[in-house]
Length: 375
Image (cartoon, rainbow, N blue to C red):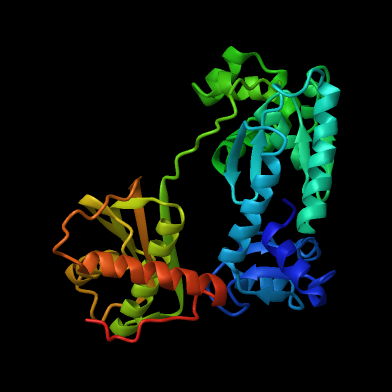
């Protein structure tokens, strides 16, 4: 999808169309950019950039708070559309997926026609644009999908893959991050074509055991299959405070809201967390994590809160300035049924949580808050 979060906001608010929209933390806060419209990208704004930096680059940018529930709804709508073309789909993120259409086409040209139909159906049913890459494998398809954004369709065939790749920077190779890119540049290897021209043994002497894999990608070779089942590894929520805080009530209130968010998302995904983790970042950027593995997995936010509050108390943070706090549930499993018929507490809380989830889905995440004091 093209500038997904920002495009959804522009679709839903005509006043934002054609304007530089920046989804994320406010312009004077210490959070980051989640997404930037193409109008904002012209100023150098991009995702994961500190919001304050985005404001300096684009002072006329319109900053919008993210609405993850709305984006999730649109994402599910898009994935449902994709399922009408092939059952072999690998979602990569909320706005991206691989489709294997080899079982529904006889010739490569037919795959290109499917790509056109995918784009048309997404636009007609969601009002949004998508960019599609068609290629013989996942690496090339991913790369092609980025070549003609926004609203693009790019094709890389088996016959032309090597020369299409040759002029591109080495950073375009899947898996080449900042460190590997720096090493390539130090060796005078600036383009993918430069890597194509180096013997694999020589390349191995330069960068080690990854040479064979990276050179195969440089020639457009990738034998990974589209995986239809991707296991969700964790569900988390983090918050960076606008100013470092020592206010324990504020910290606990934030912690409770995060547990409610994680619990709601666990229930929405029909999973439960066997491992619960607390994340703390102090004002000096020292970061620690504490985790606990449960005998019975849970999706109950009050149980999550009880666990992380105990871990927080053990850190003795009184008087210490906190920059960021986070909660996550991992080691996910199907929720276990409460079998103790004489203990109604968990069952009542589960019914209440389900009712609250429904109201929040209609009225917004912050429409209902707990009124009880925190201990």
